[in-house]
Length: 421
Image (cartoon, rainbow, N blue to C red; front, side):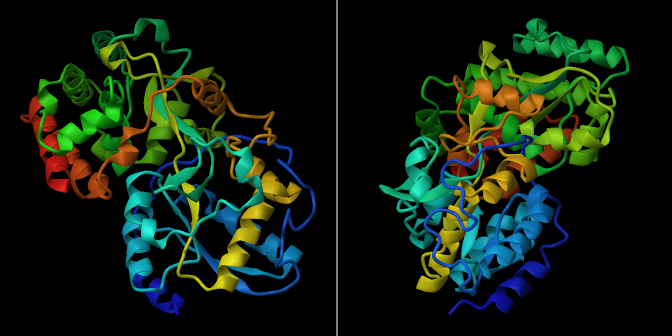
């Protein structure tokens, strides 16, 4: 029997951690299938009961809590939403699951996280709407469909069209020249921020993703068979990181909120962010055109697009709890109110065939278009936990130690990958 109080206690010390990643911006929708109040195949409507949700996207917490109230009003089923804990989310989840005090429904990043947690993941292939989701968006582990995608997201150089001509930053050298010019004008050419993913994970994805076979190259790095510093893409990455340190605001001193605020107010020409950042601009009078451009390492012309997170059901939950969790997912992805939350309240880009959104914000439109020809999120296959425990501290050291070269940064990152494996 899972002990919810124990898990809540385990979370208490983590609640001070900063928020992570991601989010998205989007809008309106039509249901993918079925328009009944309880959703297609709902068994628990009016039957009562209770289950728990723990998920990693801090930016939808308020909306998720409101959804829980609406869902109880419609179905009689209570949803207890556990607060997320920022960069410590995955560690907290693993602790709870391993001590049998974990949630019923939770989120993971498809890839190394779901592979590591595969023994705890319920098969969800029987959900009615899964046949309307592309196979490359579902998360399957060992031939079993275990993850329901939230949305698609992408990241790259979020640019101010008034300050940046993207046709002139098509190479690493051209981008570096732009950063120098922007500094001369008193503008932050490219903003990173202090949070783990925004400091290093997302931008480090690019030199991996532009390899001929990204996953094979990652394996060679992990096995110690190649050195990143000997690879042309990582040599360019090292130069770019040195240029950011020399010409841009030190990201160690910048929060995600401030980073987005500087961009929205014209103090930064670009930030390395994703379509989720658009939600931050609503508090400002943004009157310029914007989009997402690729990081041009090795002449790369593609943006990184993938599924950032998916829903998973705890295989150790009771049969009743698992049924309630599946009924909830049916409601969320097939009912009018559920899909309204997905598209309008959460701001997700549709992943289900037939679910549409005609009010996507500019960044989400850019990602939706880029998804047709994009580079992968190789970072999804990095060793679980490496970003927070190793890569981010190393990068913080680089930005606070001007004597550390870009090549030394790459060497330390390389060593972290080998040690993590």
